[in-house]
Length: 348
Image (cartoon, rainbow, N blue to C red):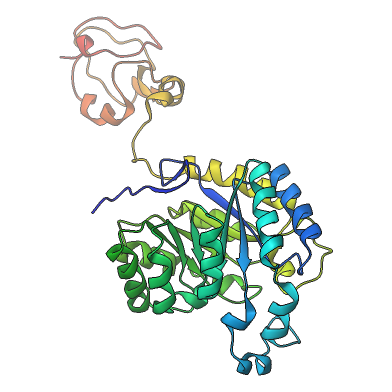
């Protein structure tokens, strides 16, 4: 198993040797309007986004009539009504994909049904995103895996055991898969982000690129995830926070997204490394470290004591402060003046 895996969407390589991939999820924030969706794409492009993610909802194939009685925690109408109102038809979704690609970005989407997956495959998407709710929908995962495209798998509400079954499906089909830790509360309170759970996911699947799909109210969770090794970050996205919709509250706007792209790249540069002096620190070592010096004139044969030697900056002397106690009690081999850095040839 590779301990430094690489995942790739089109030409974009993803892994710890690369800047984190920030995915802007427009999702259903456009409320079914292609015009608004395009305005959000414009904002994503200005922010420097590389991948825009949509949600593909073909409601009659996705949900049974029972969904008309299920009201999500972040809404006041049924999930069936929400998705009916927020879904784009095939013509509009193709137009949205074309628009994203015209702007130089990659378009991916989450299919919530077999029909949705088939639509996206006909659209020739470069990769698939699997939502947390579909992580244990193994029949659908088998269907998507059969396409042979890379997959980003969100794992919210699932256990390592149920995620393992999903990963095994993609491995069986030799489909590249990256895994994202998620908490499916909108918004997610800080204490439920659980970056430790993301670490458990990484330990369970060390050969997979991993990351965080986040639903908190800011960028801190994503930046913390990068510090823990995350290579993919996903947040809901909107052009401005005055929009209405169930996911707007936990969305990032253009400025927050630009900040996340820049700051996550910086955070990635800060992780790793080993404890010890960096070669570049030598310029500081030269003045900051202390070396052994005389604090009184010393005659040849005289014993070195606390009264005639001490430790002082800079660190350019031969004998470091750490060796001070070893010098005490030894004798001078020659006369040494006041305020001179001691050398080994001075010591008998």
